[in-house]
Amino acid sequence: MKLSKKKLLSKAFERIFSLAVEDAGSIVSIYNTAYGFGKILFALMNRGIDVNHAICVFGPDASVTRNYSRWRSGFGYGCKIVWPGREIIGEDILFPEVRPNACGMLVSLLEEPPPNHRKLVKRAFEIIRSGLTLDGHEVHWNIGEGNHFLEVYRVESSKLEGVESGSYMIILHVSPDELKRNLYNLEEFEGVWEQTPLGKIYVLEGQEARRYYRMYREIEGFGKRKREKLIEGLFNEEKPRTIVNSIHQGLKSINEMHLGLYNSLDSSTSFNDEPLFPFVMRWDLPAYIIKGERNLSDEAIEMAGLRYRAEKIGVMNVLRKINILPHGAGYNLFIGFIEARAIDMEGTVWFKSSTKGSPYIFSNPRELPYTYRGENVLSKILEHGLGRIVVKLKQVYTLKA
Image (tube, rainbow, N blue to C red):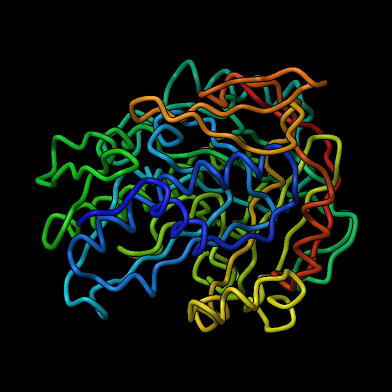
């Protein structure tokens, strides 16, 4: 199939929709994802597949990813990517370069007051020194890596039955990185590297797509058990009770990838069968438990300025069932960004921005100066009806080690 780079990028941008806070992080993330999503569209069209059901939607938290391999493949963060599945095309197809890693957060309610930070550090040291095993694997302590953390909170206010003001909760954010190499080692699968005008992409079809997805689901389950085991080891004396243990970075199905977003209707991981999810920003700001809502409503689509284009390409019904919710506020980059200009050099996209009038050129966002955004992302969540606050939490202390 012949298609120019310019036309393929244009087609990708046409099918990308955004609710994002507009800043340097979201602008460059959306632009980079047009490359990865464009490659997905090309692979589909090259097989004669109608891409009408293919769509990418960014949530309010859209930003860069610090996973450079994912970024270099053409994918940012804070989005949901959907492509036609078996029920439409008669066979499964999957694109593992989106790099699912089953990252998630566990929220636990303590029956007893939490230990002071010195006591918790001592417990953490004992676990690191003696080690933990789970399902025959040595558990990797990665609470201090990247944006992973453990925080102790006091409940400031609650509308959630069973959670009282003044009680204490824990949020643990880690991934099952002990096993993610199994998903990232593409040589273990019988797929094909497909060349597109925007670079190559790895494609799994049929049985191999299903094998990859089964492996992902097993690793997702391991990740949930890992979080539970770490909380048990650190807070067993305080009698922790899991409120929710949710995934924000993984495959909801073979043809549905969540990059930093929950499925806002998923009630399968909470204690009361309601769609509950932790939302965190920075250590100096409150955290929240949010109840997810069905989205997007027609009013939200209109308010975000998405209706005309959605109706034009026929994806209104897809947007009405996108059901997304951010897990955090995302990265705020300390660079000026008037516009994104991409320089494509043999498959690596370089971006040019302006900082105080001078060019700032980069290819790897991991090395850029950044901080975490604040409550502007929470405001967008509420404004677009993605969810509503049921618990407000105030930090007592944070552990990154």
